[in-house]
Length: 264
Ligand SMILES: Nc1ncnc2c1ncn2[C@@H]1O[C@H](COP(=O)(O)OP(=O)(O)OP(=O)(O)O)[C@@H](O)[C@H]1O
Ligand SMILES: [Mg+2]
Image (cartoon, rainbow, N blue to C red):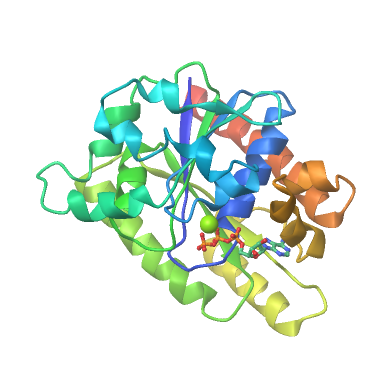
C-alpha cells in the first residue's frame, strides 16, 4: 500500500523541505521506493536535488493540466529508489487559477489517486501558507508530518495548523491522520530551544518524535551542492539525525500497522 504524506507548516523556514529531502533519502536507502512531489512554487526540494530550470519543464503544475500522465513528470534522483516531481514558479499561478473552481480542494487527489501505487511512500513538500496548494495536499494524503523549529511562536503556529487539519478532517478528508511532529534546528545550548522542546512535548505528547534534528551548518550547506545532506556529509550530526528519524518513522509505522490489525 502506498502511503501519501504531506509535510506542512504554514510557518516559513522551519525545515519542511530539509525534512522532505532527507527523510525521503534515508527511507530510500532502507530500501523503500519513495516519490517526493515538490508542491512549493519556490521549488526548493527540486533545487536540493540539483534539478535546474531546464529539467523542470514537466512539473507539479503540469500534472494538473491532464495533457499527459502524471507519471511522465517523475524524474530519478541521484539517490537510488528516490524519485521526484519537481516544481517551478508556474505553480503560484495555479492557486489563483483554481480559486473559483467548485472542486478546487480535490484537484491533487483526483490527479494522484492510484497513480503511484508502485511507491511505498509519496511525500509532498508544501509552501509556507495554508492556501489552496497546502489544502489540496492535505486532502490528497493519508497523513501529515509537521516539522517545527525550536523557536518562539512554534506553539502558536502549531495551534493554527491543527485547526486547519481539523477543518480538513471535517470537510474533505475524514481519514487524515497526524503522522507526527518533528523538532528541527534544535540547539542544546539554548535555553529557548530546550524550553520550546519541552513545551511542545508536554502539549503534543506521543505525536512528537523522540529524535530531534539539531541545527547543523552542513545541513544548510548541502542544498547549494544540489545534494541531500546525507550524500553531502553522511557523518555530520544533521545526517545522523535524519537516519535515526527514518528508523523511528518506520518503527512507528510498524506499531500503527499492528494496532490496526489488533483493532481489526
Ligand atoms: N537542521 C538544520 N540545521 C541548519 N540549517 C537548517 C537545518 N534545517 C534546515 N536548515 C536551513 O534552514 C533554512 C530553512 O529550511 P527549509 O528550507 O527546510 O525550511 P522550509 O520550512 O521548507 O522553508 P519554506 O517555508 O520557505 O518552504 C534553509 O536554509 C535550510 O538549509
Ligand atoms: Mg520549503
